[in-house]
Amino acid sequence: MRRPTGRLLAIWAVTSGVVTLLGPLAGLLWAATAPKVTYVVVQGEALLAEPEGQGPIGIDARFALIALVAGIVCGVGAYLAGGRGNDIALLLGLAVGGVAAAVLAWRTGHLVGLGHFQDAVRHGRDGTTVDGVADLRAKGVLVFWALPAVAAYGLLEMVVRRLPAGDRGDEGAGEADEVGGDELDLESAPAGRDVDGRER
Image 1 (cartoon, rainbow, N blue to C red):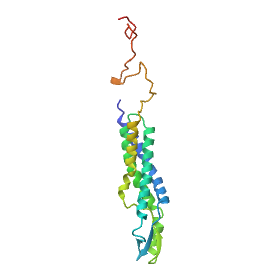
Image 2 (image 1 turned 30 degrees about the vertical axis):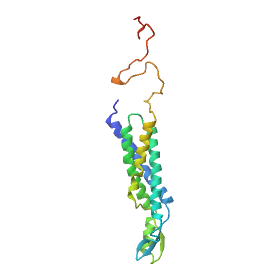
Image 3 (image 1 turned 180 degrees about the horizontal axis):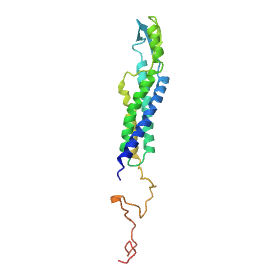
Image 4 (image 1 turned 60 degrees about the vertical axis):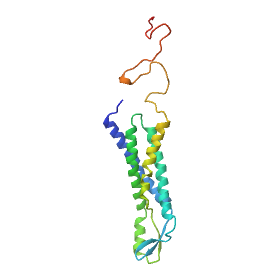
């Protein structure tokens, strides 16, 4: 049974919106948990105090982890909340919303403490150290929200048998066959009689 286009568009829009709204929250979590990276002020510019340090990599890795977990949660949530026949709309919503959420998480997390950092660099004397703010160097991790969300949904779709609305999985005679929109009675006839009870 085909769903009305308007309904599918509404499901897509709601899914995208809900996932997108989670982005800033993830960004705040990223900023609060990202490893601290120390910079040295040199002629009004901020240079890494330890160029060979793992701090910047750790910041990217923490973002990737948060996005990965958030994506999986979104995918599972969309599967549990969505009904049969809404798969395409939900998947598109997860993909679009996941990308938007990741971008918002990045920008939100980067803004936390940015003004103070820039002010300290601008007015700091040479050799002054200052803690940096969360920022992404590997922009490829921005897909780490959308891809796990879609993958989690698709995996559940493959391993879980989703039943139509109102169907509890009980097998029995007389259940509706949706072919052609008509009911097809599958009740077996008693021996020697047809389905209507007449002798053969």
